[in-house]
Length: 423
Image 1 (cartoon, rainbow, N blue to C red):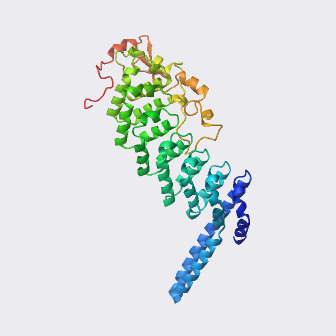
Image 2: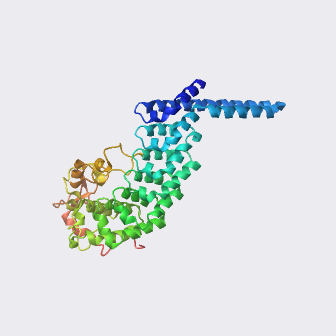
Image 3: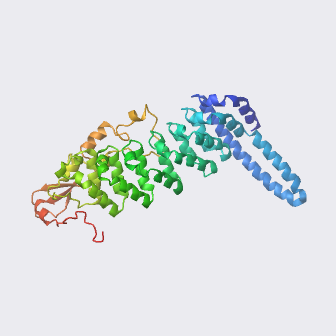
């Protein structure tokens, strides 16, 4: 260890430049790993010395031994290689976080070294949280900081992210940081973010990156905040725009999934005039409209639009729009990119707009298949009367509804949802 301390001291002035280099960063990461091993050995030695001092104190030498041990510990702390390394990198910590090579050295320090040697990273990131979080490498460093154990430095960093959450969630990389806070942080931080977007739901829902955060907020928010979100989504002037928007329709789908029964009824009633064929039915012929209609039909299987009958409501034409004999479960839900991939953004590409087709990387082949209607909605098909075949018998991937049995379907009157009487 003494030789390693001497070696690190001799190159300490060049550690920053080495971390910024393609090959030098590998050497710095190796130094970090060696320092971590030395720290573990030092902790074991200190533990053994502490037990020895207790034994000697019983013999009347407590004061002298404790003073000697304290001096020895302080001397080791000053001479440790980890301290020399972190002191050399501390002035350029923010720069290293956003560098394509330096960020790997910073992440290795967060993973390997004890907390007392990583605090300088938390302080540097908190001071420049907007710049670091908006960078494709910096957002990864912040996520590693959030993975660390709870501490005062981590709490301060989270509070800084919450303060800037409204701006970060609209950024190509900052939205990953806000989503990660919603995933791994406590209820107080989550509720602060969720309440900060009240009154801006519709505006954030139609933006490419913040719409992902809005879906996460719908899942994590309290019942009171979710009610406020749905009040905004139920505005008659905005619901049509959200349904037709390539990003807003995903927020509407998420709202249908997480809302209570009464809230879902209210949201569907607001959307019904825009889905009905009497008003042109233009929305339900769009990709977003078909996905929303499919979500409604899955939650309310007996849903029928006003002025239409079950026989006229052909789900094969509205939802399937493809070969009735082919079903690929991988294309359910339109093949949309997940909001987050293990807490990490995708591999850095040319730019967010070039990296993603539409919302979240849907390529041309997936879009073509989605337009062809590959989804998990049951397909209803009219066939000739076959008395020997039971009603609803499955053949392949179809549910055969007999023409003669259409009249046997009960009339639900003005309530097509089959809601309980209590509702």
